[in-house]
Image (cartoon, helix red, strand yellow):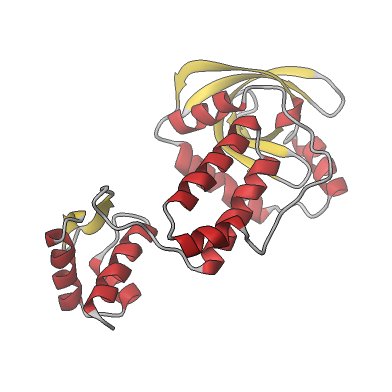
Length: 246
């Protein structure tokens, strides 16, 4: 492999992998020895790449306008177009707008040939069915997830009964027909799934649960894998029995 191609591949690998990424992982991904890897890191730094870290600590890339733009394969372009189209159909209005602007920004950075591939992608996505839309401010819920702050909900169960809940929001999940918030319910002292279309109101609070979101979400997902739902009827039955959705 030519040295220039090897350096470009290394730069792309650092961008792609969770950072900091160890020298051993980088060497494995790029197919070079550790000695060559260290020389290539030094060469990238000398060429202007802002790479933090050192041997034994791992490396992180600080993006810089002077770095060459990322390149995509045709399949990666198709995946981006399809994924962002799905966000446009499935997300709330703010996410749909963001998907459109993100695709425009990505396309603008591509070479002309790849711009044509993005504008005339082979894979398309359309949704004709009706999805129950939430009436609450989704931006507030997403912000609470990122900031790890509790929210106060007025929530309606399947029979229309209202309850007030304080919830630690962990993640928003998109299913085919509904969207759900995964969270820790302070009222029930347990993990719960809340349908977004059953939320009557949502208010931000000053209560922080940082830095527990990632650990709690990991635990919740593990619990879901141990007790998966297999069908709509079973989901509803289990939801009623466990209090997951009410």
